[in-house]
Image (cartoon, rainbow, N blue to C red; front, side):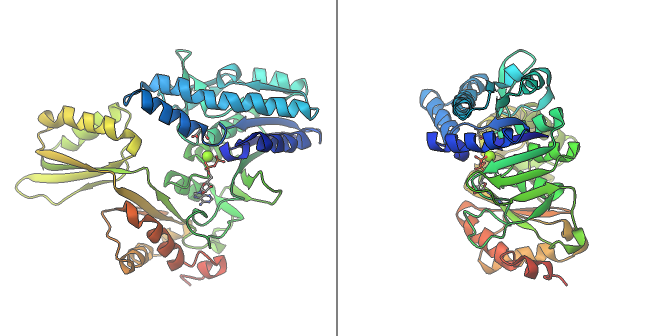
Length: 412
Ligand code: ADP
Ligand code: ASP
Ligand code: MG
């Protein structure tokens, strides 16, 4: 059997934890299985490297950021491999470039395009454990790229797909996927199963536990993911094709995201092609726009508001400044003091009134909604940043997610 195991930053946060992970890997290898390990940087290393860069410049080049951040994972693959060898398994560490993890050119949020399997396969055939640096790849110019924060999950799933692994396990600091971030809602319930679609929404809406792209790849290649913790042997959560929809709660989770900034454009001329100019300019800078609202027209002028990630704010404001004269809007503002809260659930499609219940729960807490978007399986609201925890708890409570049996019967 070929097993891919991914260990996140907290699982390899210090030497003792690295040794514990090594024991877990060797246990699997000595059962006679082939083992590929994807690993993140130790603890807060990536954050520390980012703050180091910010002390040198407030406008670091994205290429050099990737050069810098990729070193975090290089430290952990070397240390983990040393610990594994000590326990008696043959092992080799490989960077993304050494494996042949090819990505597009987009520094700091590259997409994996292709993974060579020859080297890894050859090492596996020599009965070695292969320890691969997560979060990194190489672009067509042979430059190091990174996959976006949390991207080691995606390395693991992409390796599992390329190698046709039998199992892909994601080890983290919580023992599964919960109905909300357990650090915010202490009564959150652990889900034994969740569908790819719901997990993809939760991950995209801010639940850090899996990188959104990893869920997308898992769905595309039909790889079930087992999310569990390296701190014990409990069963975690299986992410797979829609399990039993009949029996699932209408709302299965609440997510929140602080990495949100809002931009407002005032007095935008009301004529064809204006939205195209604004959003083409942003996309050509590779800025992802999330929510968009356009206010009712007055005097042939509109207001347009949209959200992006805070990481892209500086670039977005520069772009807006550059196109202001051409597009002809009078002014713009931005606000970073916001966050997004969302509810997700595959059952929403067939239950009217879910959004209204969400708004009621937030209104009861006196929380103002600045923007709203909906899809068939989610509703999201932008609110004041300071209201986030209150909002998440209120929503979790409203839909009875502390008790999954009660949640299932909420709309019956
Ligand atoms: P790793 O370093 O292992 O990749 P992350 O910090 O990226 O770990 O992700 C794990 C964290 O995700 C948890 O500590 C938890 O606070 C957070 N989280 C957010 N939403 C959820 C959720 N719905 N279920 C479980 N964990 C969640
Ligand atoms: N080390 C990277 C980060 O902190 C990638 C990861 O942990 O998945 O975002
Ligand atoms: Mg992570």
